[in-house]
Image (tube, rainbow, N blue to C red; front, side, top):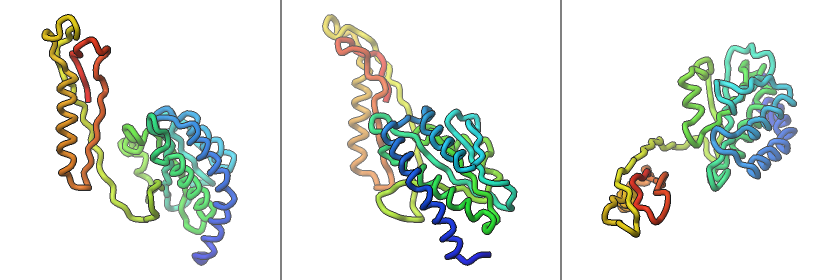
Length: 239
């Protein structure tokens, strides 16, 4: 097997060749952010680029319209490594989580590693994983057994410092529905039972609790449905 420095030089040569293209795609995604499950142009950009570099791409993939699987070469080595690329954005603030950059880094890493597949005796696959900000395509893929045949699966994600090992927080979601009684807020407000008041009380109570939580725990909430018009006591609300 070639020495580490030789392998690194071979890999980085390919990365250097492609990094400007990947930066340009990342910038394009940042300029036109697409929400989870709607990353049609974002995924298409990566698919077209990888195909232009000689990768065989299955698109769509895993019954997900905006997912893809890219394979380089004969795919006949003894080990298989998956590099996952994200590219979805958040509503209202776009790529605040940096998935445009994270995806570009994962793709670049895959392109570089593909240059030394023979030396590693490992096939490098790049898997586009959309929906990260909602239900998480990776979870769907795990349930489908997509990663069962891999020896390793990894990805890159942006942070405010460089690190190899980091701690993650688990995510759990709850939707609460409040039921009240509708009434005209001007003519007969006493007839109503304002469900939005219950929603507000819960949010205020949550805010009071948050100041006493450990830093490992975070709580966030939003109002999904707070009523239809200000002159109606809303009979339903969600947060």
